[in-house]
Length: 605
Image (cartoon, rainbow, N blue to C red; front, side, top):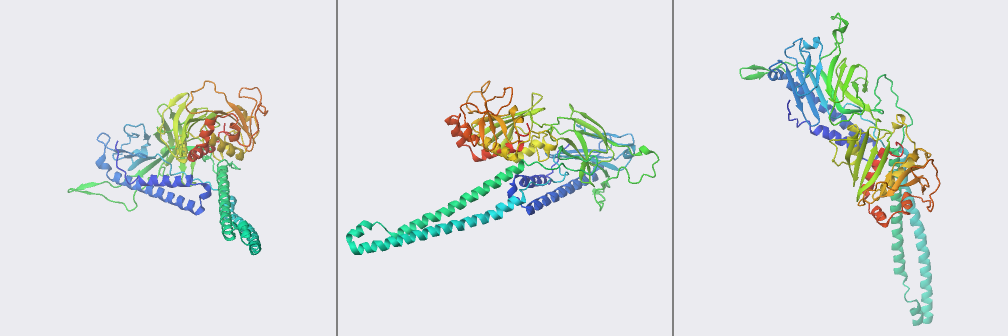
């Protein structure tokens, strides 16, 4: 096994992931269609160029197969590992019909090939990319066109019209003041003529011109302030619309015209892609008088067609049996159920599950075996909603501008730390036992963190189509957005938790538990939670608790209705807690809100 220097590979995956990240991290109201087309076009070009580079590297390696042959078998076997790519190559130099079982050294990865391939001039290549550059790029979420145009165009027009109206009103007001001042000035002149020094003394402090200019200066500040307030209002509405977009449920379930096509809204590919290829063995290097002579084919690396398109010369039906493949499941990926093998249909541009047989999975060895009628890209898929709906959740302060979000599902308990504009996987438990992950102790931005968790098989982030595959507790998106925003605002000093009564109340209300929790206080065995009900514009403390026999919307004694959660908790919060809330970092509040919007705890638990 070898670790080669593939420095030429490094820039391509990083550039591709960077472009994808830009599309995901850019707010939907800032994305323009031309930028999306440009970035996605660049991604596709880089993916094609990267695959071309891999083919060239494979061809160069196979030309030297005879010089790299194994002494025992006489065939060439090469394994080249890199951070994100592993290349397995086997060249059939001896063409021994009895040598049909291929295992790459120090691994369980290999093939069982039929006799016809064992006697042919072929090479087998398994290129395992830890990323997925095969699945087509999904649609990039953008703000609704009507809303975008309203904010962009009508918003500006509204600002201008308000400015004009304010300026007109102020001008009229100024003219009235000017007329009044002139009248005062005329009166002052008359008095001065009549009363001399006495009149001047009584009206002496009145100075028309400076007073007029001072008034004009103050009124000029007012349209600027009005313009700023209006722009802030429009920006707030735009951000709210973008947040609502995250919670928008698709109206229709995806339709698939072909049988056995993988529904990528229901399933997700994990562990990267295994590119399986049978290649024609290129001409080998030959030593001549101290030189190495090699024939370079103009057409480059060629694939070997198996089974052949025409099989008239072969009498038996089983002349081209399936090829058995053995793969190791990536160590950084968690499968909560037995993985499903899917193959890439190059013609239809989608993953399919037909043409695959004899699938066997050994979870302890993380080894999966299956048979393929023809080789090509394959991947392992898992139900994207295996951890939904959640069983419970809790959001708890840890320190200043730092919280811990715990989500408990049927299979796992995931703890996520959030601070400032970063997120980190704190711990994972599988079947009540701690599970180590490469993602632990790595701080990432919210979008990068969500992508990393999904790729590791820890998907707790519903999409717009998830409600077709999961029984959810539907809540109005506007109510959810308002609840998450206010919970994020209070998260520095208050803990929030799941309540069973949230499934009982109607879709216009949400119910959850809340309590003051200062980070430095000692852990409480049985904390005293308050049960709150929130409808988006009214918050109240409920008379019942989590252990009551029946649900009731009755108001708790000696409490009042409030318009926001902030004013609701002020009724029972300490001054220190409210001070921490007021001192919360804006980036921190935004990150907590983004994570709550992405997990949709109130609808999916």
